[in-house]
Image 1: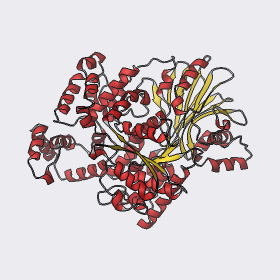
Image 2: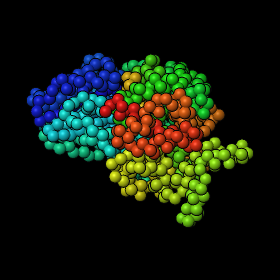
Image 3: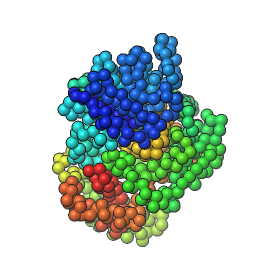
Image 4: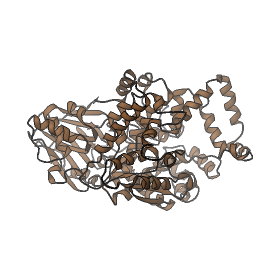
Length: 638
């Protein structure tokens, strides 16, 4: 992976500003760096390189086309680069090296940017400067695996892989966006196209931004999930289960195999779950040597999958390494998070993700990951949970739902927990009051609102964040959702277009890049996703269990008893950590007077939830983690 940055200005670009913007991205590309300024001095491009393919200087950037019309800086990997190179060579193009950067560059010079991007299979964010037209193209991959930020001010356009690079340019005033802060408190991430700063935006996945010197930016889509859904529903794959399994396995195996190409050591994350186990199984099938695998464990039994990962690694013949995380390890990571993510980010699995990336980087430079499997093959527990809940509540009249909700709320959570604690073990629900109150929150909601509530931490978040108005909703997906009949697939779609790129992929990119590790995600090959949307829902969700099709593929390589168990996720025991080892740190950031002096968040609501959490009445770990991550970021970055 690499880091890119650039400036277009109505006046001369300061080389010092560009060098500073580029150098701060050194963790993304520690192997080499480069700066290029246009002849008129008004455009500059910067690059930090992590060498993975073609380790020679022929792969260094900024890179100029053989016709000298174009200059490119690029972050990513193109897995069909050799195929495109052969096509270009047949048309007369010559190549100086074997990097995929040169393939993108010469393809754009030959057939244009839009047509070239349609051919690319991989993860990428690149900037291409057309010296003749004085036009800049910014391009981001279809799923948003690689990041790209931009800002346009009077006479100045700046862009970079990370916000910390843009902060180094003095041409804009750093100011928090209230609407972005509100969205962050609701979802634990800032959804695209927003960033935490006023005037700075994320380029949305599958988009091309074009801007001429002195002109406004123009953004267009070259690939969209809406079209994938529409095409999938219009052209369903009508074959038997055996062929479905065979076809899907072939596409997934090709995706995995293509992502194993590297001129540096390669391995894989292995959590012991369905997704990462499937990736490692197919890697081992396509490898002559034991695949190097890496996992994180916890001493808290309810969060630990390390034993399962080790068992699967042994069965597959992988070379396995594991590391157990303690609260002290978490504390050591927490001070790094604000700089690592640049804007508030509160997916608590950011901690083990960084630790497993750091561990992995000690042994390899590239790792494959199982991220995306849940979104593509309907694996999240909330999919089936929401579907069952909506169906079971359907028989209740609006008045019946109202009465049920009021009945639950007649007693405080601690009383419900106390009542259930006296029941037989089979029906004794831990923290029953907390769970009943969460259930009460969604009893009266419609299908669309149920999804929003399930993925929200603070809802509505305008009760917490001052000066935001009433709108904290995600982008309007009504047109796409109208094409989807089932609630589960509607939730899949919404996760794919927002939660996946803005939470999961952001987490993996920043955590891995902080360790200078390249992570590849085979489940997010766009061809696999297009195939998956042609499949019937019954091939994904079977008898209330997700990822049926993926499980059938995995069972060919790993015995059922090693992988068939309740889903655990990749979280950390925040609830108990906040009450004990992280309590002092948290109380400092949640100080009521500090919150009031900032004038951004409602201190009274936060203090109430903190008190309830410490008393064990409610589990507010996610709501509090959002606030803590914002406060930690604000303390360091503002």
